[in-house]
Amino acid sequence: MKKFLFAILLLYISIIGTGCGLAVFDSATERFDNMVGYTIAEKLGDAIDSIVSGGEEGYGEEEGVTITILTPTPTEDPFFVPTATPFIIATPTPMSDEPAGKKVDEWVYATEPANVRSGWSTEYLVAGGLAQNDCVHRVSLLSNGWSKISYNGNYAYVYGDYLTTDKPSRVGTVHLDVMEYTLEAAKTGEDVYVLDVKNIMQKPELINGPEITCLAIVLHYLGYDKVNKVALAEDFLKTAEPGTATPFEAYIGNPKTSINSYGCYAPVIVDAANAWFEDKNIQKKCLEVSGGTLDELLLYVKSGVPVICWTTVSLSPTSFGDSWEINGEKYIWRNNEHCVVITGYNRSKGTIIVCDPLKGLIEYDKEAFNVRYKEQYSNACIITNKAQ
Image 1 (cartoon, rainbow, N blue to C red):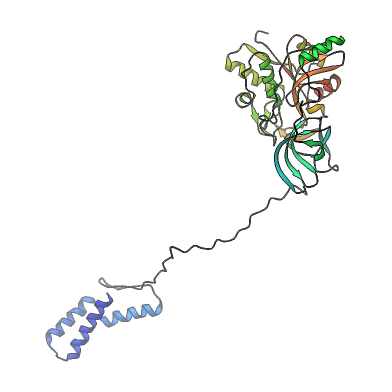
Image 2 (cartoon, rainbow, N blue to C red):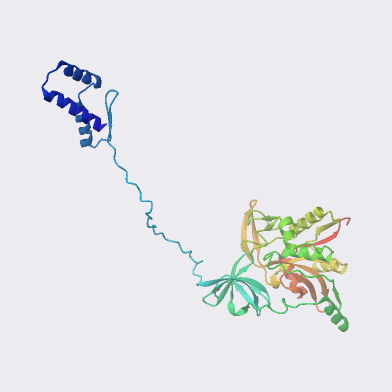
């Protein structure tokens, strides 16, 4: 467009400059001016004004001519790599003043009875206890010699000298072989009755799932030896998030984990067992016998019926733990909750024999067991034929 205007300008100047005065040229010039609507000089002046004033576009008042001033945009170098803007990665703050530690993921065993504490020194409260050979999951080795472990749905601490990664040859307080035990008792004339129930360990698959494991133990004893404890937990155990239900209504948390996982009581296992029987079309049922005395539970055992019974881990004292408001009422969790299967007794020694998913087939003092049984709401259940 600029070249066109410049050419017209030159032609205009040349015509005037010749001084020929020919009418034909005057006529042509007049017709050109009339067609454009204003003189070339005026148009160029507008363009120059636009440039000087920094305007980007100038449009003619009538059709025919538009002048646009373009500002060139730099082309980005395709091979230019910008320098990354530095950023700060936040470092998680350790809980309170917890000493620095090394993360681990391992199972350890108590070399002797030890306190489990809420913190990393003896200044913290006792949260429970470990019996000799008890197995726990260690998650961190602290710089002050203490170990951080998963315990009763939370983290707790045990002094490292009481723990070892060496698996004991016989895990548990007192391990029994039913045949050997009864034979020895017969030699001494002890009053002993023991059902031949095989134990199933809850770990490592169900870190916090003794209740559903006990159901699997009893089902195996009844001949359903293909039952898998994990499948029972996944398909038939009702679970709920903490604070949304009581442990009498659902398993609180997830039995596969130890964090934010608590447990459940007899009604939940009764529901799981009966759901399994219905699914398999088996004519049996699970009955709650909670509230009965320990002697009454032993009568079931005497008649050949093992009893799923609630107690505490290693018979450690029950303490009050986390609490939730559920349906307008406050519920407080009872720490150290555990579940075993009562399989026998020794009246002469004042003991009962249980399958403990954490320890194996062991013998407990009857009176000590009875105290913990009552602390855990005297919860128990059995499996019978459906007609009963």
